[in-house]
Image (cartoon, rainbow, N blue to C red; front, side, top):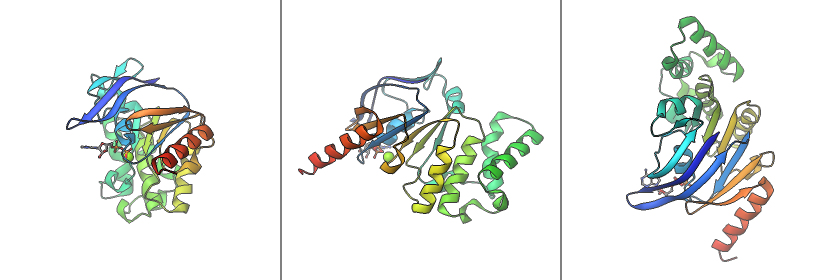
Length: 229
Ligand SMILES: Nc1ncnc2c1ncn2[C@@H]1O[C@H](COP(=O)(O)OP(=O)(O)O)[C@@H](O)[C@H]1O
Ligand SMILES: [Mg+2]
């Protein structure tokens, strides 16, 4: 179980996460909230990209501060801008690079790369540069590159924000079909009805934690209040 205990974080003295305590065990967890509410910072604490100033983030016996490598191997991370994760000359190499640290040997590595490219419909593009893919395909490539390493949990920070409706749906279908646990940070409220649990972030705190429809109405009211409606 992924556990946050009393997690706070500040950038340059400005607090953006305030005493967040959570056990994240459900299969599908959504996190919503206004811009600047601390979602990305929270997302990044989950695999040690951000270390909390106070408190602790742990996965089972591993702590992101002391066991970053063990946590990162189990908690995969997907950014909004998939282009940042596309670094190699070809699509196949982008998938392969993530596997290198697992030292599986040439044959097993090639087998896993082929399998994941096939699964995400990228086989025809294996020798093309990733940056020539469509926006949705880039995001699938980013997902494939993370999933090929076999994480237990996938953290996605606004994976569909830069995508059009068709590509958004493609990424959604893909996420919905995963066996892995997913923590999805999103502004796309349409994705949430099937989720097991949705958190609403406000000013660095978890302001609501519950069922998707209740979370969405809480968030909507919060935004209405902010607008003085
Ligand atoms: N690396 C950083 N350095 C300084 N301030 C940051 C950094 N990252 C985020 N912030 C600030 O922290 C606050 C929370 O940001 P973030 O976690 O990205 O929220 P969200 O993802 O909900 O928009 C924002 O005010 C943002 O400007
Ligand atoms: Mg963000």
